[in-house]
Length: 373
Image (tube, rainbow, N blue to C red; front, side):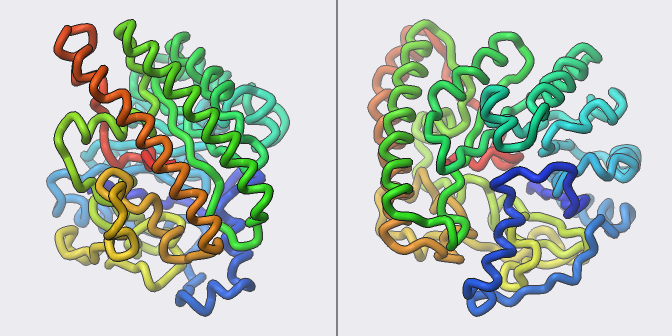
């Protein structure tokens, strides 16, 4: 099981699409749908001894350092790594990566770093000079011997539908061996106040074209024997090649992954840390007894459910956008899944001809990339 440990609700950036915007929904009727509890402290008060006892009950436990910004709690990260023996992962904005000594950083096997594309795009979203600082830190940890996977974790804002050139920039960083992979999430469906039908319709028209262009480029490289690890793409190919027909929520929330809040509650997803309806247990609960969840009821009649899994638990349950908006999101998912499916016969042929290996599409589930944008 994967556990996202929320070390701090604080952050050292103010990204323009940050999920803290969801708090604004409280005045838009969300308080009528869910029961909220905002009593958790800003920084983690979880006792390491209790965390250790909990994780020892799960033979396959993986701990993901998460926030806010987890590296604001470097001293706690170091103590956890010193005292607990499990695989570690981390999701960070990358600004403080240079502050964690190599002997600790090297024990964190995979790191998701917030990069939205090139310097112009990233700085627009995250603040002046942030791209340069993040890249400087990535170069530094590579120089200091970090060999784990670094994932560029993009957020695609509604006024930034040009996915193709931004991913191409990040691919250049893969070629430079600075990062290893790319994932993106579209900032759609998570806030009631940001739905404007004409604007969203235009976004998806442009975004879908960019996705198709990117898939075609990806396929051309596969023919040459090169499989770039773009998580929304390999995440569809892998289960198809394995014959898997029911993936569940692709992020793992509520079935293979949970979040541990700053007070020690366990919830299905980090964005739901203040919603009592999604409390799954606490550190005294046995991992095997944590409350389960899936989106099957909502999506049971959709032919894409097996690969999509419902996209996002919060989006499905909060229902913040009108039906026409949700259909645009679903259609974008169906579009890209169909485009990937069109590549499957050729991918299988290339595997048979030993131009590529099936293993090229392998990746670790549930440590951070949600797979479905």
